Image 1 (cartoon, rainbow, N blue to C red):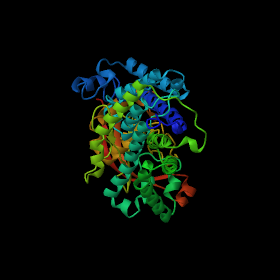
Image 2 (cartoon, helix red, strand yellow):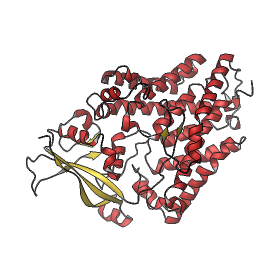
Image 3 (cartoon, rainbow, N blue to C red):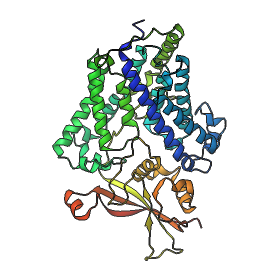
Image 4 (cartoon, rainbow, N blue to C red):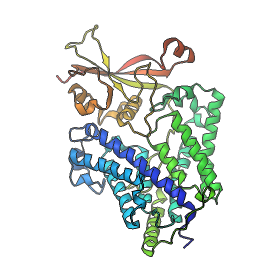
Length: 468
């Protein structure tokens, strides 16, 4: 049934599925390595406390039925191993129904994690992975040609990601409209990468061209995704190039990589290789796909209305399964970078001569001489939340005091999230936090001091605090 499926997209499906499985590997691995300190039984926001107050229907999850740190670890590592097997081709080596089962297990396991993850999992790319992963369940394997309706739904997801991000910028900060936002963004973004310093120091006319190109790719190019080939492939390629530019300039977990994966599904493989002759799908499969497509189209009403609304909301989930969501990023851009710097002391009494030693984190700026590192697509959840905390203390109401308490208690799992613990042998007696103003150094300052950052004007965020 040519109207239902097309072998021309076999290569796009292959790249999409293997790449999506690779993103799943990263997501499950990040969950496995960080959960104990964040949401574990002794974590800052424990899952057992969350499920006691939130019903299953509001946050469906395996962990609503039973939770233990061991069970969570088993699920997270099992998800990573299963995703790695799919990367290696496991879903193409089994019957169609079994392949759908593999993808369904990946989606259900990650949904279970996100729905109990609370603020640590409140990022748009979590919902994007779940929405994309749900559609992947029904995309088929080497036994059938890719169903065209599913490919169009993947383009609909990509359209909302890009077009939504473009609209939120034009409706938001004036610097997007006057093309000046990148005068600041490379410096003030949540987690700069190793090239961000160099991007920041590009000439201002180049920054204006960057913003103008971004508007074109996010507001014009997505419309071309729904045009005939090869125009749709050209549009997808432009989106991929833009996302790679963002990968080079910052650390946005797997957001950019997942957007690239979605764009790959729109590429016409027949333009580069002769597609194989794949059989028509069975009747049961066609029925399932059409039912799913009807469901997604019905649920798309609210995200579509959100795109047209003057009160457009970013990164909004409309139902607990995260099937169809709204996306967007950086509707406003901060002009000044502030960082919460956490320090401890072993002194039993605070005096003017007290020596304070800093905790260093993996991704967030701290030591001014340390060049920012590349971590994406890996997601450093604590580092991201500390960036939000510097914007407003309200972002830390649910977890920051618990974090400080665990530092004072020398909690092993919490300290694993820290790059450098200045108290390796015994916990500090006091912890304090100050907010510093950070900026990238100039070329001259870098040559003379070797520092990538300059910081100044500290102010108190948390006064000296002790368990006593």
